[in-house]
Length: 104
Length: 170
Image (cartoon, rainbow over all chains, first blue to last red; front, side, top):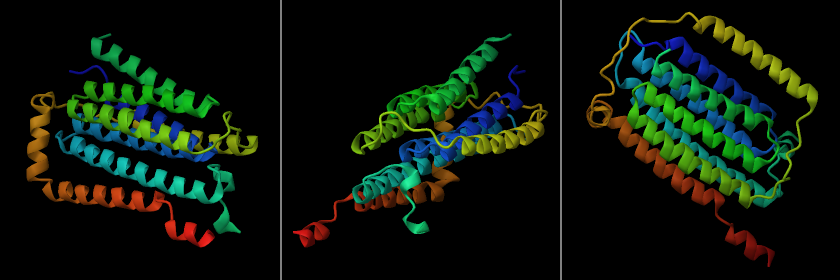
């Protein structure tokens, strides 16, 4: 019988998700916004792996799903950074407050 | 207090401390370095959840690849060394909304317990994941390779310098 309960893992994931959400909404550097989104995806991965061990029907499905999530997150980071570089070349800024061309 | 519990508390504390440093530090490079601690602590959490392969992948992809690519992104773009804070009202409102979200979710999950666990997951973990990936999940696995190819080519095209535009300027 394990001593650490499922609720402890879910709470840790929730705290990390809230930190990532706060960073993504309040930080002004676009690179930090991107990395906050990675933190949120990581929190979701903790949930998937925790449910893979402590669910009614335990199995490897959660771990495999988290591997797919990590792959998609890596692809997202690469494309996001490429968009950022292209934007920097045109606007000379990485500040998200100044990226408002489509609003004007 | 068992060893697993001590390991969990230590790793959880490291992960949350890295996240709090990400929010509070002012130097952009320091923020990314603080997040490396979070990613490595999360890898430790995966080991306590008997997911060794996912833990190794986490160290490779997150604390290796993604952090380095983000550092490249910071170095290649000009930025203020000290990041300016967002307006105070916005920070407070966002904090309140996220706090409300946290309280609602915590109220739901704090009693969640299915009372069962599979202690067999860590035995031949990598081998089992490999067998599953190449039998039951083979189509999503192959689609992932297509996704990675598309992301690779797409990011090269996006970040490539536009030669026609350069020549038109001359």
